[in-house]
Length: 297
View (cartoon, rainbow, N blue to C red):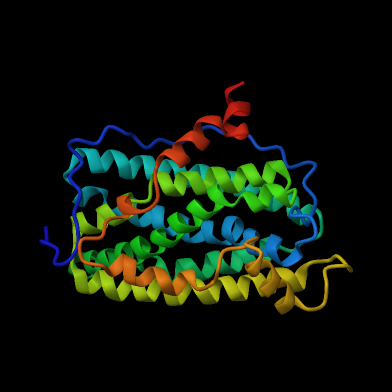
């Protein structure tokens, strides 16, 4: 495998924590359309995080499955398999939330299907073979490693955003996004380490990280705009930009500039995702998530 320049490869031999899919059970029956009271636009930005982004995660899991034959580190293989299992559980849980919002009149399915089609068209394996297949897999892993950096950062934000509870966000949806966010923090290093193992080139890492940033920012803008326009409520407000600025200022949603400010950190020589915020917060939440406890009973 390539010896990376300006990047850090982690050896898994001393790692004690194992990544595995968790059984969870969410009850969305009482969740209103605007599950963050008085925050229509903020609700739809959170919808993008947990209804639209999982389509990219599905493609990510597929790429990792394709990479397994190239990974000869048994510990990393175990992490990759655990990652794929977690993403499968994410898809099931978010599909249930999507069905509920659809029943309340929010046209989510048609947009998510369009995103899924676009993701498959752009990020699928394209039926390539030989060297072309391997090079395209490396490119996808680099791109997904960059995207996973942002999902880990957003996961940290969801775990730490006390304002969501203060605003009275519905407990089921709050648990859904925090459970997902916690698992994003938990497996934040897996795609990066898989990329480093299969390729590890810094030039590809830098190029794909910039592409990830330039892809996710417009995806958030377009997706939020679509969901806001499709919102059937008459009292959703007319001035979405005013709502966006207000929600950002009050910390109800993450700052959009995160898609720019995180690029230098990710590209810093010697960076590794394990250097992000503490893992303990995520693991504590996963141990006490109401959905996980409900599944256990």
